[in-house]
Image (cartoon, rainbow, N blue to C red):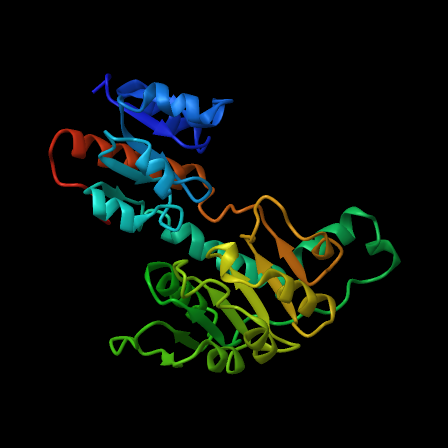
Length: 313
């Protein structure tokens, strides 16, 4: 398989890069100064693309690679891949579900605690030596808060189970009601937001879910509500979120993703009711290695004409 060209769209993970290089002819797209020239030079050898949440395979890239057979995403999300174009051309698509579920769900709970108990602000309070001048302000209890989840898939269910351990009632919104669950279903995001204390975004990003968190939803969540986003930045109308937080129309937010990463609205930097993370939901050594192994396993299965491990298309 060493002669098979694999195009890696951007730097993702050192372990993944090393393992791909051992097995394939790895081509690092992000190092090319003239990308069109690079593609023209290598187009007949590239049979696979490895992408992630920041760089995948759009229609233009797919059209420029006549020998492309498979797109393997180092992510569970597929919003950076033109799935319709892949289907049209018979190109296989895989992602990395399940192995990252625990980390993203763990981080969701961490963000809830960090926002409500002001963990980051408390840490800064101690480090700046302010404790000697008086106790830190009282914060908000997490146990027993009603948690609303948008998207009750793998990650949404894992968040729900963890929140239940804190005696949190669970409500949810999804495209269809899931009668096998005991959680309360709301037929709209606005209704869900109006009936929960904490709203978690855990759905896939599609055209339908882009800006699923808009002004109406934010206002329904209200002055004491908290938004947690571990989905994609484009799930949220970011200017509306910023204005709601600045104007105190929303109680707080824990954000692992942003609409124009790595750009983050500077208005958020000075707010003590917001916790900001650099898209690290899957960012543990264990999970990133498991994700990389899954990408490699899918590529090897494809080129050895075996069933894919996690097929999408």
